[in-house]
Amino acid sequence: MSKVLVIEDEPDLSQAVRIKLEKEGYDIATAENGKDGWDVVEKTDVDCIILDIVMPQTDGVWFLKTLRAHPAKTKIPVIVFTNLSEGEKVSSIVALGEYRLLVKAQTSLETLVNTVKEVLRLYQ
Image (tube, rainbow, N blue to C red; front, side, top):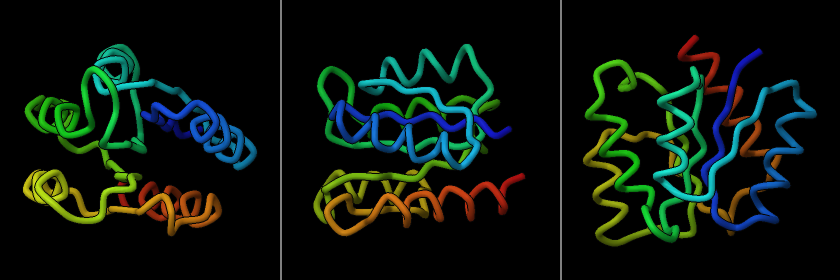
């Protein structure tokens, strides 16, 4: 069973994503910000990460920089799931080599699940 980490500060959205992915057979961990997400990654083997960018305390850009700087964690695929669609933070994400960027307002939960399936097929 693949383990997916959802890093999202909106409780209703986090719960909806968790429930949808659990119904698809995934083991789900959740975190409310980048630091809490990093704590999960340090303690648990994670196969895929769904990451919001704008969060309190530590944001998604901090998380990505930390993840990509850690040699044992650089290969974990990340799906950036945010309402940002342009600007400096998106440029930061692109510079970190992320290739999946989904805009929340334009993406159904079904599309998110299909993206997770696709990413896991490519990386496992």
